[in-house]
Length: 197
Ligand code: URA
Image 1 (cartoon, rainbow, N blue to C red):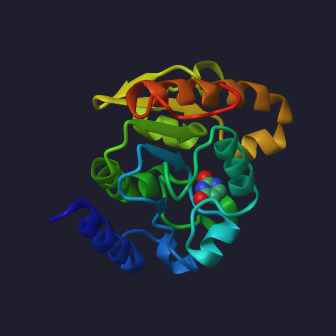
Image 2 (cartoon, rainbow, N blue to C red; image 1 turned 90 degrees about the horizontal axis):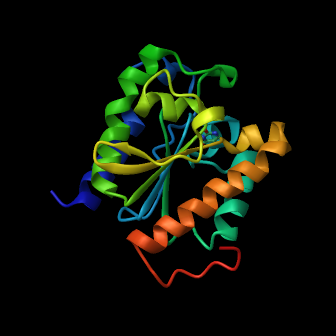
């Protein structure tokens, strides 16, 4: 099956998913958004209120900040990035994902990564970094350092909601994204324009 078709099929699977108790409290599952052949995949934690209402990833306050950062890098959702989450359903009151929920939902994300086949993976915040790299991963100490995950390049950086809570982290996050632009030029498109890098 072609990757785009399988992603579509998985989208419908996720709409029906009842593999964990979060299906009882969710409004809409959030499969992820972006072109199926994006060169960059961004991975967040789990849908929040706005995402649960609409079924779209990162469209609330964090999403707006993420869009600004992407735009400063001259990356755009419709062209360069696929955005998804570790969990496809919102945990009540945005509580942290339970380990059992992550375990149950992870196969969707792993297959999404395989199908999108990005040159660069970017994890946003501690949850996706720990999920893929192991529970000892420390985002405050290790953000901005390229990791090799299953033969793929992975850049861990802060979650936009952490930047909203603590704007002092914005400088570090921007340095991480500049590093991503440089790697994108190296691996994907040497002529990628960005006025800041
Ligand atoms: N926070 C996330 O981690 N993901 C979203 O989709 C929205 C907010």
